[in-house]
Length: 264
Image (cartoon, rainbow, N blue to C red; front, top):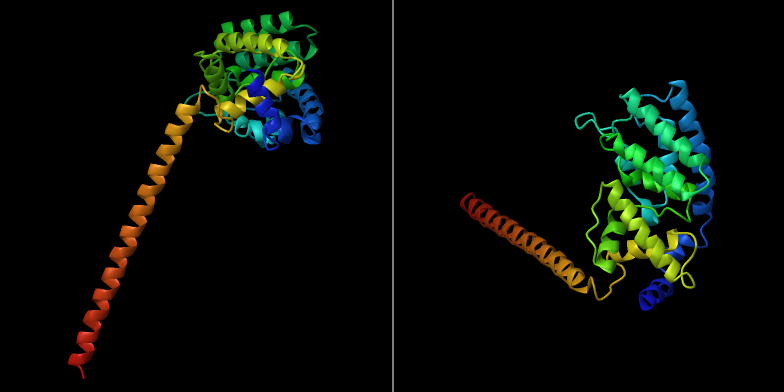
């Protein structure tokens, strides 16, 4: 683990350097998101939140997260209103919307992790369709020392590094992952940070195959081979197509020459 962390921090192009440290935009996002959440909560309480993600105060909050493309590109997707799937069901279902508002308010005002974990269990028990651990990205910007961010690459990196089978879309799975991340972060705190963004960035790098370790080397090699095969197949098709077009072009020239000869 120490070697993996060292490789991560040594790479000047890793998210540790491009996102976690020396990044004023990341620091500004904490203030923007906290301020934006106050507006979200107020809009929900006053009944002016609206029935779509677009144009809502929540869009402002999530945009501030997803603009940090080094780690959070695509974070807004989980909050887009998808009418055909009825997810996430917080735009047209007033009961769910108010429950979400109470959850955000409780987390914003909470001073300890037990209170927030209790609120997560309460929200999870409501079974609000489509409202899963993507919300943890908001929690991270409220409480960065006790709640890590959450996305596909982070989960993939976590499962690879620690030989786990954590699933996306599950709050209990997120809490299990969080507990292990907290333990590992505490164990290697001299190399990482109190801010869980550092270790989440490490998992992100592994999950996105930028950081190759023993546990994901075979998978990375297989994926690279697949990419190479697809590239070669595409190139082969292009070459074949070009050859056919060239043949057709030459054939047409031949017929035109014969026609010209016949006409003198």
